[in-house]
Length: 292
Image 1 (spheres, rainbow, N blue to C red):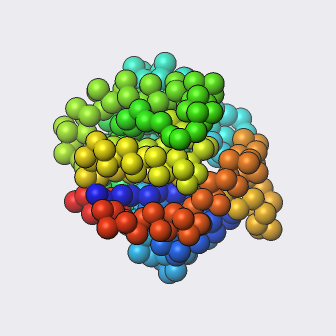
Image 2: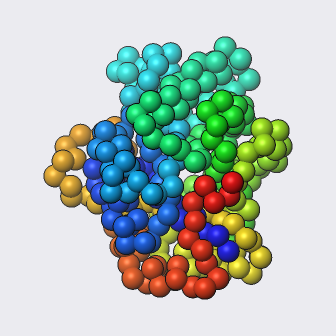
């Protein structure tokens, strides 16, 4: 079974970037995705050309956090002014979608002009599950010869913890899980239209902020039971105490990086237990390049 263990948000902060670098160098991950407006973007580009140049790399399209690249999506402070619901409600407005496409196209061009080669696309806070935005990204993937895209087709599964199994119904994860699978009915046809590749399954929405060793093991067990040959697992490791992190793209990111969940997921991502789990003879640690 090919397993893409991905750490999103390289370049978002120095703490994110360093944790992702360390996780990959330990052999505990195989892929990442970059935020073009991240505080540590330039530092991440340097690492991606040197110490971690063999990692699988995706563009992490962002339409909701920090500074916008074009003014039409920005508020008076220059930050993105729309949230997921607003994008959904405006997704039938062709003029608005043209602005969205200009913004996303800029992000593609930025990573390519900075000498990075991307093998897939994902999106911050999963904004791209909205079919109209998903189609824009698929069209740009064809334009820039990117052959794969993350599709949030996550099966329902449980862990050995009853409290953890209940948590998606208490927080918003079950809503995100349901929305992603609902929109996939349309997005799968769009993906096929543009002849893009994806994994058979994705794990990381249902237990967002709880992707510890036990959750990852449960995901792998579930994938094996279902007979999947290619899957992606998403985890967000980040160091909260990097002295270079003096500013953040938003207050939300500041809170996010200092959360208990980041410490839990970082500890799991760097652990020998994860490395041993990935050393199973039935698992081949892979990247989206291996789908092509």
